[in-house]
Length: 210
Image (tube, rainbow, N blue to C red; front, side):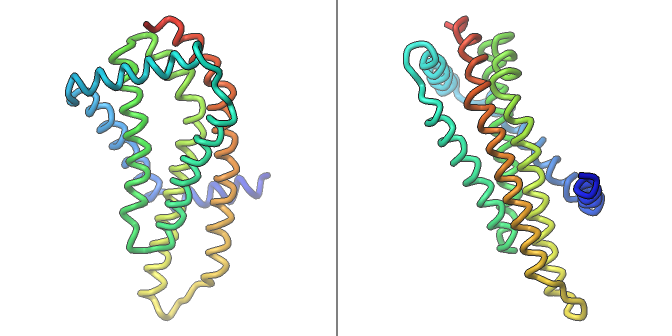
């Protein structure tokens, strides 16, 4: 464990600028998402609110299969994680790495903005108990994944430019891929929280939303 922690600290220190850039992109995405709630057409906003209320009613009127929620969330997150892995290998796809983290930020910002604007204090509770718990794991995962991908892509560029100092590509690729496998396993924890814990609180709170 100390060795893993030391390696992680070294990784953060050597990629501090990239982490800063990725977190900045995430914050920009969150800000844009929150701002979008304010500027979208009121009719579209009401359609979204009606959809949310209909979704909340599912917790009371129908039996939601936990396995369906688990699989759908797992597929969605693993698809984005896989894209981030691919973009790290394809140097020309570097903008895609930035897009993914901005997209995650946008979704969070828009969701939080809509919940708070429409449901006030209940919206804050829905965010804190129904949205935040799994995202406390998912967001760091995607920040780390984006940093790994951008760092790997930049390493490939440097390797192409510096012919005199070649790196062991297969070793670096193995480390890169193994890191993503670990992140994918952590996604399982986040999805489990989203499937089995968050819905309990959402059901309680949504019962007071008309």
